Amino acid sequence: MVGYLCEQCANASTRPVEDDLEVYDIVRVDLPGTTLYGTVWQVEGDRVQVRGTGGAWLRRAERRQVILY
Image (cartoon, rainbow, N blue to C red; front, side, top):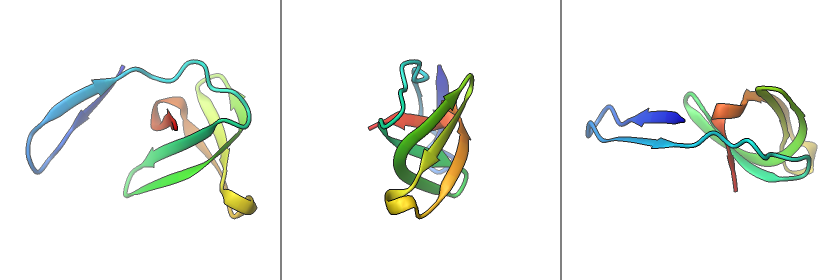
């Protein structure tokens, strides 16, 4: 489970970590300060490599930061 806490309103929530990600899944990646949308390019244990639309970027993220879209 991943926990979230809103610093402005003090609301808290949780969500399960995606455990069934596959190559070519469309995902959202919640990073500190930004949110990216892309395609899963590679899955390695707790890390996921995500590619932006048209190959604009390639980024590794922790599985807890990735949400199946």
